[in-house]
Image 1 (cartoon, helix red, strand yellow):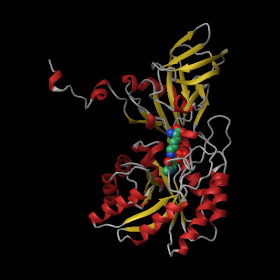
Image 2 (cartoon, rainbow, N blue to C red):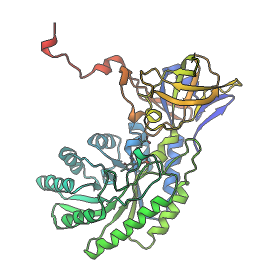
Image 3 (cartoon, protein in one colour):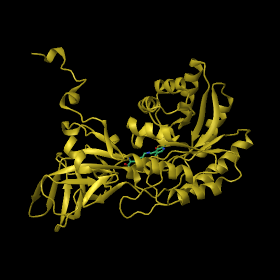
Length: 419
Ligand code: LLP
């Protein structure tokens, strides 16, 4: 469900014609719908009603301050993976008491920042990290709240680049090593065990891998009890998939129902770290056709957005629906939709049937709200696009378009090359 729809043959974001925004700010640009973001959050949250739970929105999916503020106002916490994300989360007004810190390579500096902020929990991923955290906490005279991320060795049946809970992945600890970590933490005066953590992958379209992971966590929690270790939180991570094309992921209610069943009788608070399911379908990337090009082998629509703006098709061969902003009757053609970057991988779609569009016409690349702008770069010295947020009949630029000066900000010619 989202609030991008056609009205009188033209694409609207809530009550604003997309064309109007393009006219005002140029292309390409990311466009987010407030109503969609709110609805997704509320549907997800309500699905877990009746169960003690905390939603920690996964900041990496879309870290724009406006998006973070919106979720903060809905009551969300945050799942962060860097000092930069902590900085953003705090700036946006997210409560540190609802922040969990994940990631395999937290630096001592990042640990200090998070301890100073007073976050809810560190999701620790190795013995080395746990020991470093203990030292950092000791130096600061603090006690670090920890969970150990376990690797349940469950196949999430998703793209290999985004599956994380398999034995061969770099994430989490196998159960034996995890137990060792808990025993170390139990004895350390500057560590406090508060939870068990896990995240098995992203864009999951089935419930069974989540349930399997939860079963293994439950068994592990029981094992911890034998060592007199009690935990308050089970963090199951994120990963619920969305519809990009043909997928049919379970709706949040079904997902929640399955987890509730597994958790009944356990006296814990469930933490969830959804990213994509909250923001993915709440954003689009709007781009303009520059040229139509026909070679003996292929037809191409060359657009003004590129892989530096939205990397997912190039990186994961991800499918994104592409629709014209004006939906009039036109003949259909089969084209590759490509950007201006000097890489064969710079495409948004291959052999896609689309209406025949002329240069100057606008296209919307759908489901671009998650892992879109956040994965953008300046490759080919392309200034990154603006992010715009629609709210009813109003729209706001929530991150301005970069300019050329910004491209070289921070660069310096050393004295020996001057003159
Ligand atoms: N928690 C942890 C520890 C994670 O690593 C992730 C995502 C999430 C939560 C949120 O997962 P979600 O609910 O969004 O699936 N760039 C890739 C996705 C990478 C996901 C990385 N981790 C893509 O564009 O598909």
